[in-house]
Amino acid sequence: MMRRLLLIGSATIAALPLGGAQASGGGNGTDLAFIPMERISVPIVDAGRVEGALRFRIVLEAKDDEAAQKLTAELPTLRAQALSIGSEFSRLSASPFIAVDARRFSAELNQAMHKREPAIARVLLVEVAARSS
Image (cartoon, rainbow, N blue to C red):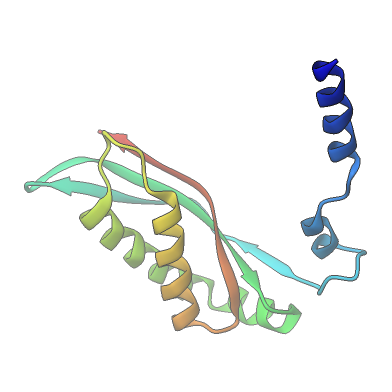
């Protein structure tokens, strides 16, 4: 009986629309633009030796279409900023032998990138991994 209730509850929840789906198009959400960046790779250095690489990919969420055009034009500069943030995070917090603290890295990316360019609504960390060399 409990299993049947669980299945019915799961099916009901699965049928509900997600709140984030409205922002991707025809809903009543704002018209958001996403600007993806190519994967960035920075070395993980420990005691003067390269131990591995921190690889990550981000997507910039622009506040509006005008901001998206501005961000696209400034993409090389914004990529350099993301590379700098990744290098600093790698130096202080990354290791190829432990999981990357993606929540902390995402927060650092958001804070620094938004400070650099207010047209960024948020930075989405869509991929992150630390690999040994």
